[in-house]
Image 1 (cartoon, rainbow, N blue to C red):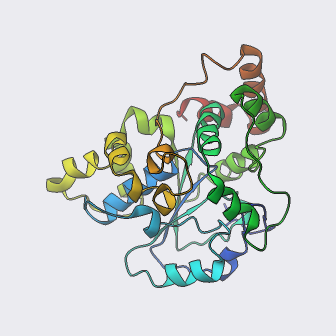
Image 2: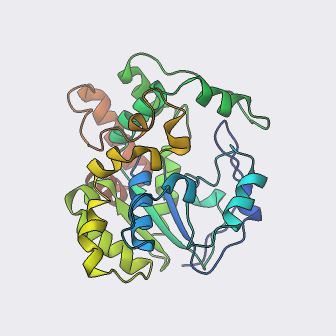
Length: 296
């Protein structure tokens, strides 16, 4: 399989994909990629614990910025990541074809059932405060319409997201599909939220092997504890962007529940079945099954 090539730029109230054109890769960079609300923060925490051998009090949100978020401006962000002296682990929500893909970097992609994604996304969006809207909508350089507050009904929110492919954020299906299509590259590791829930210690060891980190066994128990949801919730200000300043309720709103299946008692059966049919149509049987279960 040949290395993917960037074929387009993505701009929106959130994105400025052009930052990758000026990013200087290092030989040991780690890129953590997801659609959004799929376990990004969890995997950032895991990778930070592996790099820093179970150390506490790490400001992961500051150490591992969302590179293609257009706030703050790319000049500020590029300077900050260039100044980092530790092994870098950066975050992206771009599909592969809007990204500069490097043979030097290791890419970890995390997926989650879209219904669980939307339930988490709704909490994120519905609890965003005025500062969040101002940063995304009023910072100079926005391309496209502003992001507006969500409807009061989460089912309406899900229907719009499904019918308009990721609205009001970005395409769900192309994000999943472009990463799935390069899953066999040696520097790509696919991971699923459900697999992390089932066997977090095993998945941590697999991630460590992938990024070539030897685990210190005397630090293992502490490292695993620091990756639990309970620990992250207690230390949420270190994981949430700007310490949670963009959300009502602060960082604990950003680090919300960490559970799947909350849609089961709320989403009408017909709408859930429409999602499943769309997943199969857009992704094919094998990828859709993996997206739904976490098992390849």
